[in-house]
Amino acid sequence: MAQAPSLGMQLLVATEGEPLAVAAAVRSQIRALDSTAVITKVSTVEAELGESMAARRFQALLLALFAALALVLAAVGIFGLMYQTVARRTHEIGVRMALGAQGGDVMGMVLRQGLLLTGIGVVLGVGGALALSRLVRGLLFGIGPADPVSYVAAVLLLGATALVACWLPARRATRVDPLVALRHE
Figure 1 (spheres, one colour):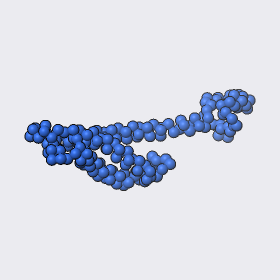
Figure 2 (cartoon, rainbow, N blue to C red):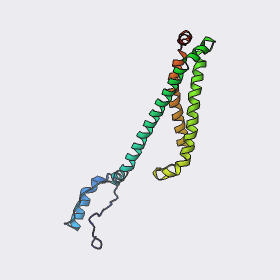
Figure 3 (cartoon, rainbow, N blue to C red):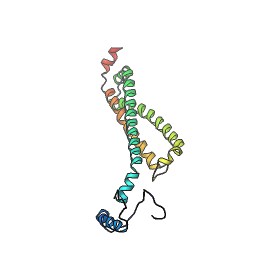
Figure 4 (spheres, one colour):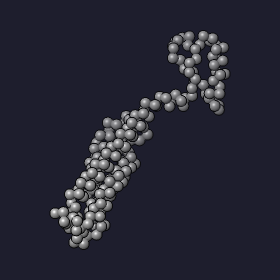
């Protein structure tokens, strides 16, 4: 310290047991060596590492919140599209049911249509994510930009969300009364 005085000196002490338990002894030894030394902060290495990672944790939390919001918006969009599709095709669904289509057939038709659109979106999204993954390489820690587990988890989560969003309008389509649907036209 005599060779290069600085206002921001740090002293790291390796201990056995609880690190903060030896803080008083370390302070007294420092004061014995230099009575003018000012000790402002005593903490553990874990606390310092946690503090240094706070900004990254906040960014990750913000990213997770935006991802959850995007998932909710995607689900609402799929639900709205499928609900509107079922509403517009009520007459057609009524004719199909009048001609002998079962509820399961109608549900399968609506689910297939919704999941086909979702599948196209997932394929395009995964392709775009793989193409742009090099841009986020610096934000990733512990995984690569083309981590297959992350992509599979994202596809499964989106697929499950789309299935639920399509199932509600599909269930409505199975409850179409053929007589009411035909009378409307």
